Image 1: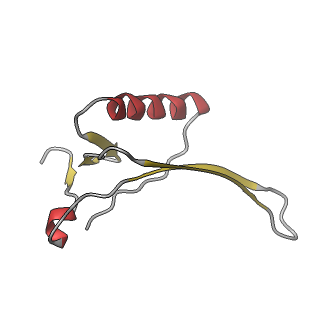
Image 2: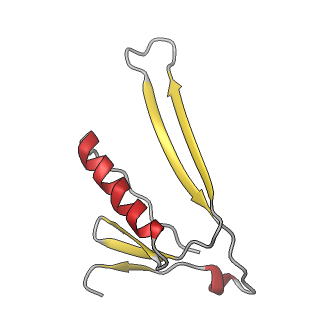
Image 3: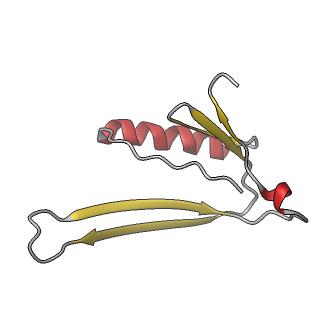
Length: 95
């Protein structure tokens, strides 16, 4: 299968820049390349994609801060006959 996930603290402006870069790739017809922490993966979304957007806030008794988040997710289905056909290849920079 394969999964590439990261979490990094960025400014609002840096976050917006990353989202714009992804949007520009998505707007084209080629594969989308995600580069995270020296690793990368290419994905080729089909048309249409399901766009999920979630905003949430969580607070627990005794806490002095509330965690809030915005989550984006794009989901699509690709025809495959085997698990290998559906797997994504994660590469490390320099490979």
